[in-house]
Image 1 (cartoon, rainbow, N blue to C red):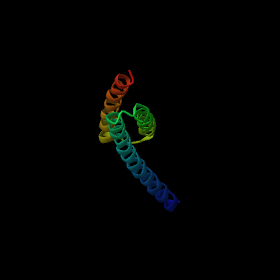
Image 2: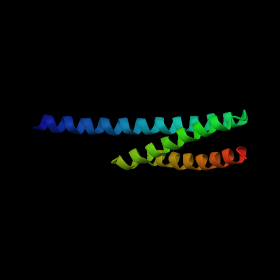
Image 3: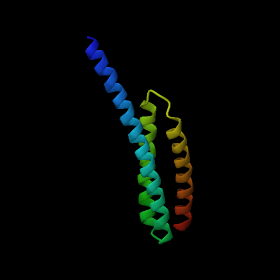
Image 4: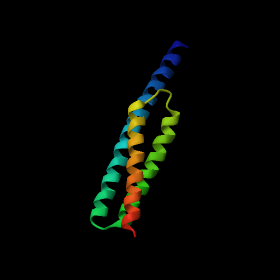
Length: 100
């Protein structure tokens, strides 16, 4: 019985590590999408910038979902998510302005 408990604890720890790694990667990917959107805007490609905004916005939703499932606090990721939301708001405004 101890072996099963130890294995379950190890699997939970691995799941938590994987979740943290996934969230870090997802945040980084979203910021790359935001940067790409800015690049596309600089080229006048509003439609492509909008696509990148949608990708990053969906990523923020995914991050929010999985953060809610995390058993531990992840303050670094929460801070980056907050920063990402601000970047998404600014990007949305830029795309709206460029689309006029």
